[in-house]
Image (cartoon, rainbow, N blue to C red; front, side, top):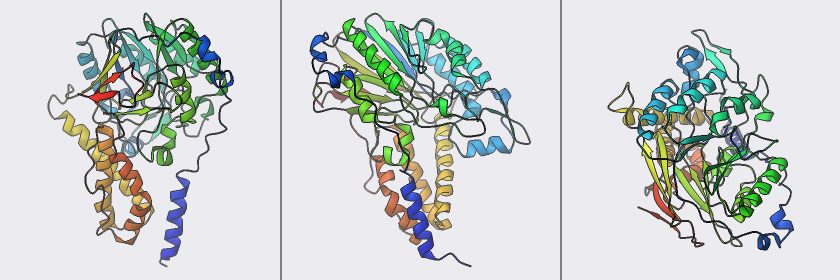
Length: 460
């Protein structure tokens, strides 16, 4: 018996509305800067940034090949994802060979160190990143994949078997040399810490992950949130930074703000809960630069509050194992400018030529497959899927690369049938969002760290 069109339509509409049904919990309690209007007048002015040069990379998703790269479960994992796991070791080696050539004071890695928190992967990447640079100190924070992950497995020809993940205490021990052992302060309620990578600059390494909610047999929690205890600790340390005449930057895994229209509507788990509140807190204490990962895209977005003098920039970097396989070089000058340049892995040992094309095709084909899977659930015809899925994938890849150049027609439903047109009617704003490049530029720009104007970042 054929399903009646009205039932399909109602089912589809229900699914659409479920995309934004998640609750982020109650708003955090008010902060000291809000409760005490005199506080800002008793603190020293925001300190100038000291000269610094550093590297930012994120989401290496390291995967030990000894955990298996064959069998039905591994094939399914790769099909449902866009990460080049089997090449993660080579890609990290290629990044290291390039980064070693660059001058640098320190390196930031913004989480998702491993595929799914496997202890063997943590141990291996902790060893390998020690050779990223001959002199630069390295600082890490966990990502949603890294701690107490119930999906830590090895793959066999028949399927998969669970392997040991890590507890939060173990993560602090494994990465002790990368921020935790020499921290100025550590948050008792999370894996957050404060370090001083160069004299006069405090780094707020913020654990935005909800690993406490992970349960055996379930799925790891993807979204991010700070507890009230962590936020109190954070504000106390921000006040200490001001009192000690230290400039401040921050890094975290989840996005600080939305990076495209529809980001929080469709993929809210990629932006930290209560993002406006968290961004305002950082901006209130003069944090201008926040480095993030998680969505695997090259995107920089700025948030300006009308009642605060300076904006805060969320500088998201894409994943090493997802096209375009980027990392960033950041230079802060004594003249209070921040220059951001993007670099991309162009070759690996097994592919000295053609790696960029391979990586793009890997991401494109995987996204087309995921798009077809989603459209099939809404009973879009084969022809409709053939027409829509590649357009959706191209929009997504445009966002991954950054500096999107929106075409006149972002997506067309011509020839896709009634269900294809219905899908597009409800979700065209997602595709529009991926093609929309919010200011400033994403890959190369200079930020004026002294200016309070909205127009203080210029591409070059």
